Amino acid sequence: MSKISKILLLAVSVVLVLTVFLGVNSSGVSAATSGQDGAYRQIEVYTEVMHHIQQDYVTDPNITEVTNGALRGLLESLDADSSYLTAADYKIYKAGGGLAQRSKVAQAGINVSKRYGYATVVSVVPASAADKAGLVDGDIVEAIDGHDTRNLSLAMIQRMLEGSAGSTLTLGVVGHDGKAEPNKISMTRAQTVVPPVVDYLPPVVDQLYENTSILYLKPEILDHDHVQQVEAKLKGMQKAGNKKVLLDLRDASAGDMAEATRLANFLLKDGTIATLEGQKFAKQVFAVDREKTINATAPVVVLVNRGTAGPAELVAAALGDNKRAEVVGEKTFGEGTEQKTFELPDGAALILTVAKYESPLGKKIQDDGVTPQVVIASVVDDQAGVEDAAQVPTATAARAPVKKQAPQVDLQLTKALDILKGKTA
Image (cartoon, rainbow, N blue to C red; front, side, top):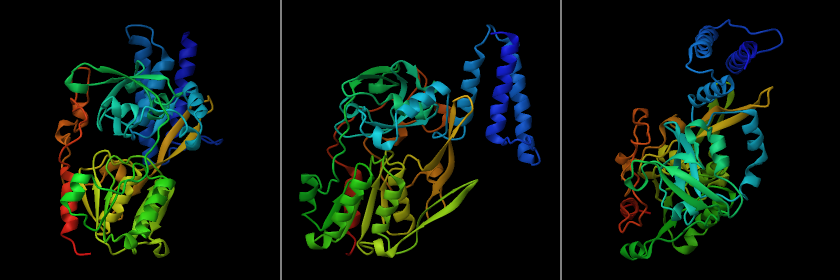
């Protein structure tokens, strides 16, 4: 690449960053505020770094790749859901279609986010290829078909997990089965079939509690169909002789925030369900609609774990903060944002978080997750996980995931049932 080309590319990258953070219009860029002044100073630092890379690096660098990496890191430093997509990536991203189209695409059966720089398993769909391969919540996916997930945006990671039915997917999972080196796990993509809402306790547990009047509800996803099922079961609980509700949201990490708001409303008489607000995103308050309340008096316990994310977290936070339910289990994953896509002149795009959901008590779900009132660890102890960025996994240092096993005693479920048994309906 010629010197002139390098300089031009550098100039374009600087303008791009200015466009994102300062705003560019036909009359030019205004640096009136102290925040903008600070941004300009950072641009100067960026320019100086790029100069040294061009002039002093050991080999002639690929400036396009350097710039793309810088922009990707810039967005990911904000939060896991913000992404920079190159023109090529954005073309692939758009080809995947919207949610309706993507729901028909074959998948491996894992819901992922990005933590500590790598793709991280939030939850695993029961009976899916990933479930059969032994993946568990918190597993760190170092590579997808040989591509290092550190160099991929979350949007592209999610697209790469999708494919045609019968196609093979290979994941490099760090520390899987206790191994220090990434363990290659191959699986076949298949159309994911999400089971209906489970409304029965395991036989042994049911016998232990002598068929008490507890309505057990476990939706795997909070989409329209599953929330409709929950609604029907809540409306029929009196006829069925149910007087208490156990809402099991463990490993529920997909769905729709609007449906989550509707579900929470079923069990609340009044108050706030959640709020959504951003720097330039008009604050939205989701208040309880009494006409949509189904049962505001039955004792309720909500079960959560670290695989509880997004819509399910909103429900748990709403019921917990409003003192409507006791939340039992582990601290949840922390996922609750609104994104907007900004297309750039060169065909690239930004997927930027523009607002975050807050619980009724003002805690940002994305930042804080939901901490249960009664903390009970699962079989895969949370202490075995990565706790902070200082413990970012490498090929030789990572959490050693425990292979998924069916626990003989579900301590979280047992505790939730004990709490409900002691409540007066």
